[in-house]
Image 1 (cartoon, rainbow, N blue to C red):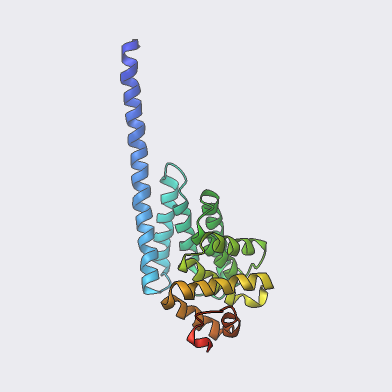
Image 2 (cartoon, rainbow, N blue to C red):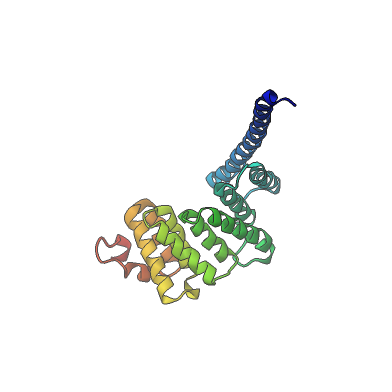
Length: 223
């Protein structure tokens, strides 16, 4: 091979490689979009996925991971959410849901390895630990990271508050205060969302504890 053909060959190889990566990225993007549509639909309708829909969504999420040229945290986070939806209707600690919930937990852990400053995934990780009824050091870390990294995000605080009120009896004093402060922030940041937090606290007999953390702008439900 003459030396004048080397640049042309290099361009050809480069072009083929770019095309190959482009196709993989396209497949990954389309699959990720498909998986996201399922999650959005389930969330909007507040309905547990049918078995058939769930299988299609899980396959799409796995395909997005497999075809992406590099690891993307959002793909693993989305996969975790799909696994969490699998048995969302079953009680915490239910044996039939253990496999899917463990898969969700592992997907969230992979997400956090790639993007450790993402408060929403820390909150989801804490919630799946609760669904598994694994109230341990990993659960505690997830709660604290969620509040530390997302103090001004009402969605994160709402999730932390909900987790805490449900698991209240298993928490220590420091964890309970963390939960109450998160609930207080929700009420201050987004009164509409805060009404749901107050309703949950009342339902689970924690309203008096919640009211006690307010010094000013006390909710009317506490008066």
